[in-house]
Image: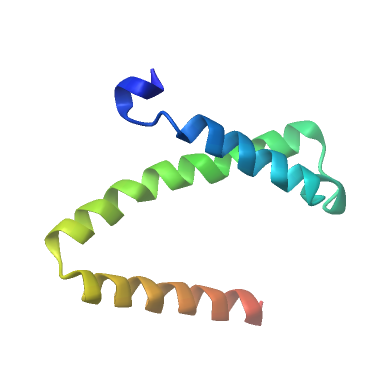
Length: 85
């Protein structure tokens, strides 16, 4: 299935990311159960899939420099709000 979608390497990459997060202690440091950790992974990958399409459309319709500047601006605002909270 993933080969048909052109995502042949995605399975290995996803497994590597999840394995490394377990090695780094994300699950134990945050006192997550297995079900909570699985929900966290699901939420991350679903949001990645949802926001990937608008990003690709924006990169096709607008100049890359302006699109990336807008992304960096939005990300910096998000980080400032996160730090203030």
